Length: 455
Image 1 (cartoon, rainbow, N blue to C red):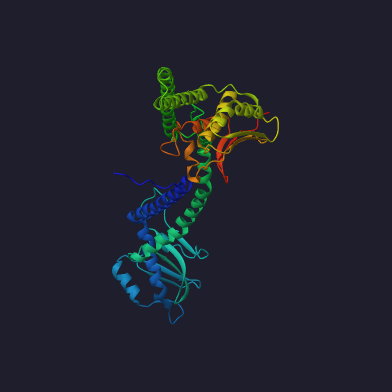
Image 2: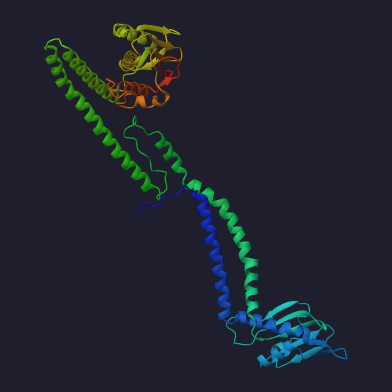
């Protein structure tokens, strides 16, 4: 089964979202556990049942004809009396009038006006004291005016009161705490993640430098988190396998090229002893083609092996030497060969033999594909460029990248080996330069560009 590949995501903000969800869940669970513990222990029941009694007395306490306090039989009070057999309460006003029902505990009955200046109080005992009844005192606004109510446990509170109490706790505690924690998470998590993963930037920089020219390069896991180390180790093992495969390929190509040279030379010698016929000429051309291919394969291997032979060179003198060497071949092919230089000397730093091979391949490519007419021009620019132009049919735009691939040919019956331009590209890359096909109204123009010599 093929699993869909997930799109990239931000580790920082994914952590922020999950931490916020975890914090909200933990806070909510904590509140629910506290409320549940109070409810199961009877404490929450007592708190709310006392509120039921106080709420019923708001409408039941009125003024009597003598100005004192009196009770009227309201439905709430009657329901309270029927459901709480041991109901008791003490009601007082600020004028000293007092109203009592039931059997208040003596310690609460003797309290008097000691709490007149206190608006709300819960009256109880210390942990470890003998079990005794608790009470609640509160000043409330009633039909008789402001009164003080002292009462013990009353009727069971409605479910709505419990829900309201939980919502009040959430609004007054959970939401503010969650807001503070969310702010800390949003601000702190990106910083923590950035610092924790800071070593990955160095690893990414090392990975950017890895290419075929740097065999044996590995990523450093010294400053990466331990959770990322397995990935770095896996990449290093993959690089090791790629290096080994690349080394095997190079050895195979080198061995194959060396092994081909001897039978090609023997075959060429035997063909030269045959009678001069058209068939013999074609066979000699094919053998020459094989010999060129073997030499180009060896050139590729020499480029990989001999990288420390760079010296200061004059690009004008080097281009002029290639022009002199290939002039007879160009003239025999039906061309004129011209050499131009915008400045002299043009200093570069590189491998003399490799650069001569690159220029020679460009000129030979022009001789082969230039239509056997017109002029082949070698032009050295003052910006360390060499242009090789011909007056042939040119190169289609869609072919300009593919022609530098190994064994690539523009035409299926092309007699070239398909390695010459690839070798030029490898030589340019080895020198830190490039080779490209330029737009031209007539013919083809290849430009070899080399970097400025280091001071």
